[in-house]
Amino acid sequence: MNYRRIGFVLLIGWVFFTACGTGKYAQQTIAGRPARYAPEQLKDDIRLLKTILEANHPSLYWYTPKDTLDNYFATAINSITDSLTEFQFRNRVAWVISKIRCGHTSVRFSKAYSKRLRNVRAAQFPLLLKTWGDSIIVMGSAFKNDSIFKRGTVITSINGYGNRQLLDSMFQFISTDGYSDNFKSQLCSFNFAGYYYNAYGPSEKYLVGYIDAAGAEQTALIKQYKPPVRDSTAKQDSLAKKEVPAQPVKRQEKPSPSILAKRSLTIDTANSTAYMRLATFSNARLRRFFRRSFKTLRQQNIQNLVIDLRENGGGNIGNSINLQKYLSATPFRVADTVAAPSRNLKYKKYLHPAWIYWFAMHFTGRRDDDGRIHYRWYERHLFSPKEKNHFNGQVYLVQGGYTFSAATMLVSGLKGQPNVTVVGEETGGGSYGNSAVYLPEITLPNSRIRVTMPVYRVVINEKAIGTKGRGILPDVSTPPSSLAIRQNIDPKMQMVLRMIKEKNKTHLAGKE
Image (cartoon, rainbow, N blue to C red; front, side, top):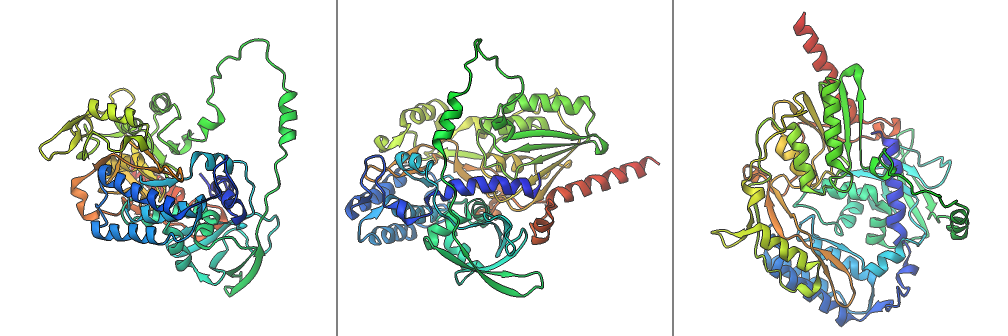
């Protein structure tokens, strides 16, 4: 994976997310609902949200003491002194939810608002930026032939706000596990314009500070970018011209482009190395993909496997377990503890789909001596490594700030194994644990804002208590750099290839 491809992916997500980037749209009526909501309606929604979380959330006070979180909720409620749009209210809710420090507890717009956003082409901040630490670097510009903000340019301020102040203001709307700000940095890289708007609102122009080619700090005034309006009639005409096949279309043998965007395997026979890219653990036909991939590795006698998890935000734990079976040297468990406060979810009328989760928890959960409902299959079952097509060569796991949830669990399960090396940056998912497994959605009755709420607290590794609140640290740290972005190189993959070549040289020298 190179930075140019990452830039394209981020640009698509950036344009989609920042469709909300104008105050004008926030005032519109959506699907017949009022454009603004009365203060008491919104206060009631926040009070109800607090009550539901207190009754069901497994880790509400894991990082933030109850009295402190109570104060945050009170602050959010008291800040509502006038009617608000859904966009404005969603930010209030996101602010208070972020104080729980749970990456799986997150906020979404109402279904009607989200549907409307898909068709909005709003003006937005024109630069695609990557952030880490205090650094903000240009990945691309919406304006063609931009002579100032070229790829790799170092940004120092926007509208008078320095980098640290910018990021801190944007981070307040993002939920993450514990104190892993690397996850927040990665999300801001995906959606800088959107999070900037959340923190500072819209602007016709932006005064941007930057470092020029001579190393001097300069400023430049840039205008907002207005995407071209989509021609819906042209699309309809093109659809009308398509011929209807006379015979049923047979299922394609090759995966669709959408599947290939989520996972791929390439093989470098010269270095006896396979590169597996996994952008998710869900909806990508992964079991078949793993089965065929590891068969190919055995047939071609591949000695090195690089698994790129930098875009993997998690997904189906079963797929993560399935992959681990091909790589683990010994039987393994998923986690030390997977427990919920109760299997009887309270306030079911606001939870969706409540009955599915109720049934699942009664079927899979058992009450233990501590009074909590434990998912014993994940706690106690030893998963055996696969014998057929098991990979015994060198494994390199490449991770970053967006490596989260089930992807973090995979890294945790393999890190420390003699033939496994973890390369990259700190994960977004917690090293010690997180709250996940089942994720019902709370729908607030007045605003229809949706809040995802986990049901189980997962302690991945009791021995990692010293790292509670942090992500998994790599064995070989390889941070981003403005030089790498400017030169369009991938420092993490370069590091992996260097290690493979050095290992191959050592192996050959040992044979002589």
